[in-house]
Length: 354
Ligand code: NAD
Image (tube, rainbow, N blue to C red; front, side):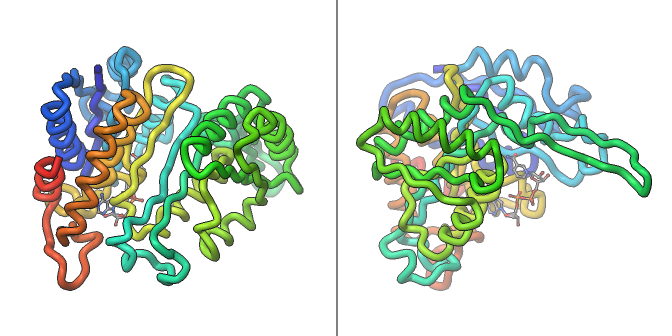
């Protein structure tokens, strides 16, 4: 199994190092070999090659079975032309690999209930929502333009979707719902947007093939409110790119810390990208303070979705839970009476537990 490893910038190096430690523990336990190839992306690629996404990175990723990614970006590259910024590397690798579905679980470990901003009675015995966000279409990738007009400028972005683009992500979402609580909520703005009306028609049609899934519809403004009011009503949410970007960040905060949440980006091709949902956290980089759990849980998603190693994925999730049970916490999730540990120690504890 070939894995392209992209450490990226800021805390990327540190958290990916810990995730590889855990992968190594899985490799020993299950006697499987992972063939790792390190490549550059983002700020470090700009410094070393002059651009955020070298051709070699695209080639190595395409020839791999999965990509493990830390995070890219940082203040050093904030003032360079927008077509050369680290984030271009991120969008570029997603597009190059055709990963159209971003799977973002928002899981609240019962041990970390007090880290959530919500009241305990709203959270019950924990949370487990999966947001399936369309990743390579919609307004972020549509035609954009600016023209001069009397009095200033006019700018527009185009939000468009085709039936095949909706069809492929809807099927992914129905299948994921089938492996979980069998409930799928389509979030859209079909009362005002034509593209949303096409989403609703297409998803409804496909829903007829998945009779065991309870399909519900919700406008995005209502969904943003319901996520705070009663998050336990959701199982799987499927939505377009921009709505998904915003709602998945909102859902992540229900769980307390950005440092806990993994993500997977998958398509019809064989290569998936696995990465934490947070950025490169330049404010804590190089200080042994970053929480590596989001990246370690991304490795669990890689084993589950790319390598079909469900037992090993369970092992990682259980190891994280065990280490939290024992009271170990990185600074972002630290509470009184718990044992403070750094990035490296947290990685060691989880790897040992496997
Ligand atoms: P961020 O997610 O990097 O950080 C937000 C806050 O959360 C910071 O206070 C940070 O210290 C904290 N945090 C993040 N991850 C943490 C972890 N694992 N453990 C403990 N604390 C953690 O977002 P930002 O500050 O808005 O962005 C910083 C840089 O990252 C920017 O250059 C941005 O463009 C980039 N970024 C990259 C990605 C990506 O690579 N996928 C995503 C978002 C932002």
